[in-house]
Image (cartoon, rainbow, N blue to C red; front, side, top):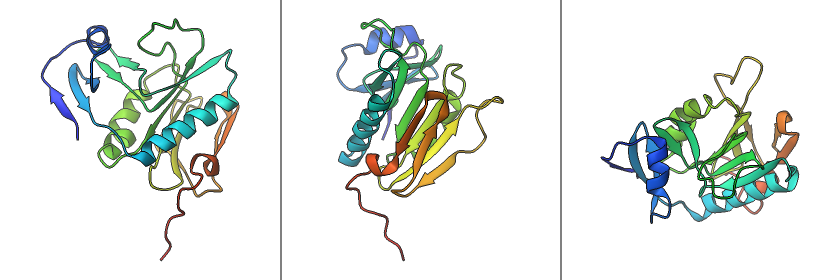
Length: 190
């Protein structure tokens, strides 16, 4: 569940306010929204995805960051995606990504609508973004949007099953779902 705090501000003021503050918050259209924690499955997938990306990307060009690091979406919106791939040259004291190339979210029951809807629409406005991934926390399944010449497609490519492979040509990356979902049960078939 998300709790909204009535304290309108812009992204710079929010990042200064949120730095070092206990709890998790995002700024959505100028309003501070308190975020909740996630499940063990959610945390495992975030860690494995970040690790898989870090192993495959050139560390001199890219930095893989997790939900402690912000993405400034607009003047009044700041999100903390589960995983961000940003340019590697950013100063260590930065509070938000310089030029996020990949953003990934792991679904939780309370985030399905936002992750597949509002957040996707927000992220697609980032000119540096090449890929947006949404991963299920319950089964080997990913929704993948890749920027093409005409921008992002209206719908996601859905990749499912342990044999699935997420291909991100712009980053020269292939991510096997079997690696991310290792030891997760296969979905029950009826």
